[in-house]
Image 1 (cartoon, one colour):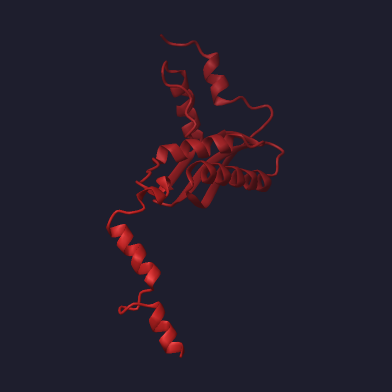
Image 2 (cartoon, helix red, strand yellow; image 1 turned 90 degrees about the vertical axis):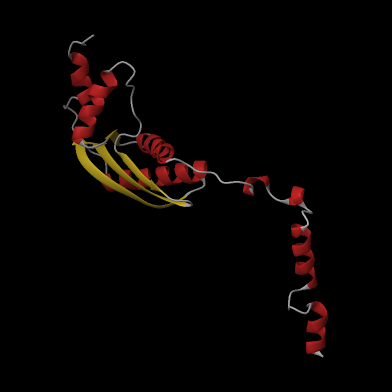
Amino acid sequence: MTETTQQNRTGPSGATKESTELSKGRQLGEGRGASDPGARGKTTIADGVVEKIAGMAARDVDGVHAMGSGAARTFGAVRDRVPGGGKTVTRGVKVEVGEVQTAVDLDIVVEYGVSITEVARDVRESVINAIERMTGLEVVEVNIAVGDVKLPDEEDEEEQSSDRPRLQ
C-alpha cells in the first residue's frame, strides 16, 4: 500500500507532480514576476569599497589613534598636504574580497594607556558589523597589527608636517 501511494505522488521519473509542474512553468516563462528582484543579476563589490568601510569603522573606535605603519603614516601626511591629495581612509587597511566572503588586515596605532586587547576586540566588532551590514559579505577574519603606541607627549606626523611652511 505504501508503494502504491508513492507512485500516485510521483511521476514516471520519480519527480513529484508539484515539482514537475513548477519546472514546466519556469520553462514556459510563467511566474516571472514572482521571483525576488534582488536575485536577478550579480552585484560586485570592489576591494576599495570594503577598505573604506573597514577604515572608517576602525577609526571610530575609542583608543585607535591612527591607522597604518610608521612609513605609511609619514607618506600619508605628505600626501594629505598636496592639493587634491586629501586624506585617505584606506591607510593601514588591506582586504581580500571574494564573491561572498572577505578578510581584512589592519595596521593601527593605539593611544597610550588603553587595553590593546580591548581595543582590538572593539575594532574587530566594529569592522565586522559595518562590512557585513553594508555589503552582505561574510567577514571571515580581521587581523590587527598594532604597530605603535601614541604617547601623550609625542607629536603626530600630521602636526609636524603642518608646522613646516607649505610649498606652492
